[in-house]
Length: 137
Ligand code: ATP
Ligand code: MG
Image (cartoon, rainbow, N blue to C red):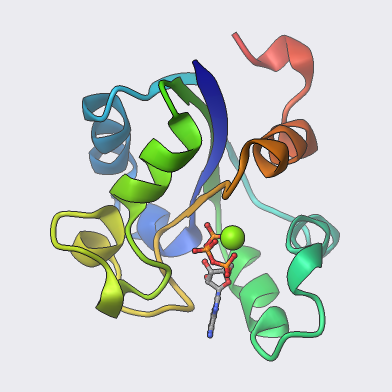
């Protein structure tokens, strides 16, 4: 059993897709252990995406992620990191497999509906970035 960290990004929240995306998690066998709506500060978004600092899309990414509320959640299940990446689909919705969240709910690489941790190490770091231990059931 494994945990991963997920964000429903501002584009998907604005499109009223929280419930639809939560259904996808649960249908894939991913249990929601913790969840909250937040509006990220500039500092919070810059820190979260620190690995991308210096890339051409960094400023736009931070502006987008702070543009409105997001849902952050901890998901648990068998191979949760990979399972979540699979149901999310490729970073660029144009490349995402049919039936994935990004293929169905996003059109732009810059506004691609969801984030999911890419490894167990980043999952642990990202969970701790947004949740205290007592917030995770
Ligand atoms: P995420 O980390 O959000 O789960 P990912 O791991 O598939 O997505 P990364 O390479 O980590 O993709 O990029 C992080 C985020 O930065 C992407 O989800 C996307 O929103 C944005 N991004 C990545 N590449 C580009 C790009 N070429 N142009 C615009 N935005 C981009
Ligand atoms: Mg990533």
